[in-house]
Image (cartoon, rainbow, N blue to C red):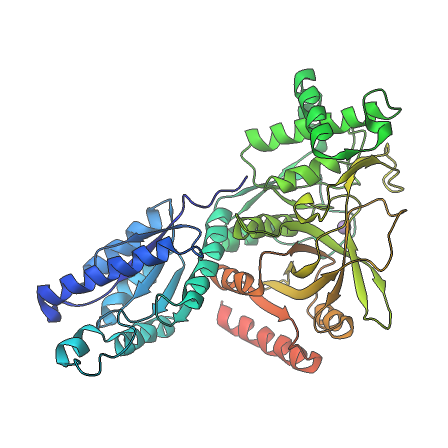
Length: 501
Ligand code: MN
């Protein structure tokens, strides 16, 4: 399971010597109180660490270098209680490798009308101190999130919490290992991409394995491990009679358990955070891994089918963003449509691999034919997904850059039961509607595979994309196709020019 509580955000307050030690002591006291309140907020998923107030270029630079090398530090929240001349920040900010959020707040909530004097004015001057700091961020063209409002305000704390979740996912990607069993599904374009560029820009490393390496781990699964796994299945799911002990297909479930034990051991011993499979390369495996993939995703692994390493990495990132939140995150595919007067809907599913974290009911464990790939019938979990607002996001390699496109949707109950559909599924209404959403998605080159979540929002994804330098395109209730196409054209120009040589 993913635990992000060990991560730290450093609360950094800038000032200058001009104010004298007494004022600086007060600045430090206030900053400590704000850092404490942010850390204690239910919205903040990580620790907030107060750092001593910095007042010189040397101290700023030292702090930024310290942040770069501190493993637990995933980013900075900066605030200028008083004025901190921003030329002092150039040396540090140009070296800083961690994301930062600029909190534009003030210690005092309201002006004390009857008491206010110049001492108060000199202490509470973020209104201009933060603008000076903001200028240098923009002059240096640094990506950062600017959050405005009083630090006790719930919305301010929520915005910082969202950003901290994105920062945790970004930290998680750095040096992450992704295992790829087999290559890409033959001839598929969107799941391909430049893995070297991904490692340079996004920080994760994709390791290719012949499926034989996985088969070896599956063959090495011990009888005890397999028996324990079988018991977990019986405890956790509504198991079809044929799969139960003594049932006709019990041996197939045992084979599914062997595959899960082998995959789990392989991924754990290699310290992988995500993986891919492909149904075109299963030599030596009796079934396409369905159940195993579903359960590994539930436990926090990213996954992409058909060799889709980009979606696998994205599922992992969204699972980190969602850590501890209700809702769930799954690999997903836009599968089939329902055009109707009650609204055009998308039925999302995959051959097998939908994560049970999005299940609305206790999953049913069953065995059914796959009708593709020419392997034995695979065991799989079947369920309906939760209803409510959700988001689907996909990441593509556009040649010159990575692009993320996301669509906000509303998952609804199916119009009728689906007794013959042998896979987990979700039915949704895209926002603003299928006509606009699918057109925008297709113009953007969005993939058929997505990472789908009820807990991650467009705001998490935008913060994350900005940290990662990924183009971000959102399709929601405000989307207009013609404006969206304009945005695509302008973005092409922007990313071409901003990249330089
Ligand atoms: Mn697929």
